[in-house]
Length: 169
Ligand SMILES: [Zn+2]
Image 1 (tube, rainbow, N blue to C red):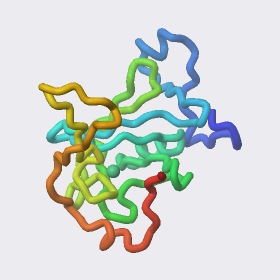
Image 2 (cartoon, rainbow, N blue to C red):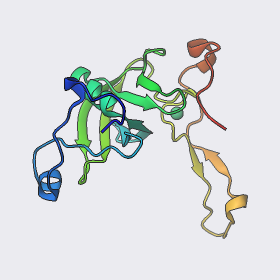
Image 3 (cartoon, rainbow, N blue to C red):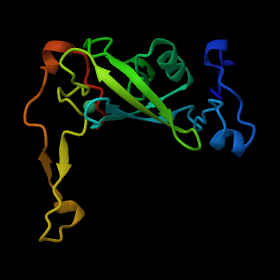
């Protein structure tokens, strides 16, 4: 499953034995991709708004189940990421769902503190929309972004200091 060291007891999920088991059964038998990751969609438990999309490895999934706090795998930093460890913006898991073939997780969370989920300072990572004017055909290169959130809920510099921004160019 993970490639390197055999998973510890705490990250050993049920083996996948049949499509019926995976799609119609009650076993949690997640399918991690070749990198050992699955996709996570995180929404606000109250509003239903999408807060972020991330990935989990087996350890992140196991820690999330055990602690009821969202853990992810940070692809930019290549490490287990307990959301809110630095900022205090812990995501408390209200509900955890998994999709039909068990390769994607949906977390419904209540976020501590200011309720922000995005390291840029916004409530949701999806704080901009692509402008799709109703009366005009636009090309991909002409597409522009419009801000949906008008203010940041916290100051990233004050919270993270000079920690390198994880966004990769
Ligand atoms: Zn973000």
